[in-house]
Amino acid sequence: MGHVISKEGISTDPQKVKAISDLPTPKNAKDIRRILGTVQYLARYIPNLTSTAHPLQNLLKKDVPFTWAESQKTAFQKLKDAIAGSPTLAMYDHRKELTLENDASEYGIGSVLLQEGKPLAYASRTLSPAEQNYAQIEKELLAITFGLRKFHPFTFGRPVQIITDHKPLVSITKKPLCKAPRRLQNMLLKVQEYSFEVTYRPGLEMLISDCLSRAPVRATDNEEEETVSNIAYTPFPAHRLQEIRAATLTDPVLARLKVAIIQGWPDQKEKVPTGILPYFNYRDELTVQDGIIMRADRIVIPQSLR
Image (cartoon, rainbow, N blue to C red; front, top):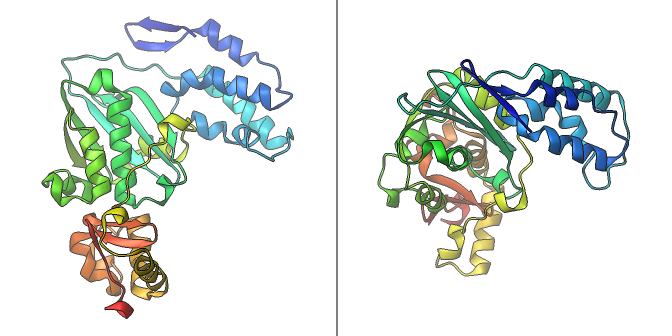
């Protein structure tokens, strides 16, 4: 697929876009897969491309019969319209400051590369089933590592300003590596070669990356990376870990704590539920590993077992 380079920036080749716009209605899953594969190169131009294509992607799921309903018909037409109106991306300038905006949702992560507020490229991917169980801070850091590595030709060897709407990430990236939970350590080690600074910005001001994380491109198998769990390093025998896991499940305070860890903490301390308030000051060190709450490499023991 071609691109047109002009003084305004980089845009899609009108002739190539017309070829996609003239595609006939797909008749089976193979046609859907071919169409989605053809338009994937436009993901760098259109932030919500995968969101538009979602009804079509559903037809690729196992045990889902191929039914061309109104939702698929509408999505197919919207997809063509989005392609026809794809925007022009700014051209990279090594003299200008480089910004990487990232966000994570329940099931996806997204990044957008910008200079002077103008997008250079977009990227997103779905989270694997294991990653969907990560704490929110882990998902947010995963989005940063994804963005830095996805745009490696631009981000390597120069300062990068990283924008996140997850405030605890700012402090965790400034602490010594040994102070971070093991999974966060693993992620941070993967981006040690990059020079970056993390800055907080409220989510309402990060519409592009937020949209990308909520409409991600489906990840390929080699993009789904597994990390070693802290539980493997604990001195507890298996039956003891099972006791802790079961007690954590029935502990009302730890149940609320797990929700805060996985879904994200309130921005203000005053909004934190009373029962989990004591954990707020070190919230960025807390993770959930296989049903057990960890503070760095230490297990948070339920009240009934203390």
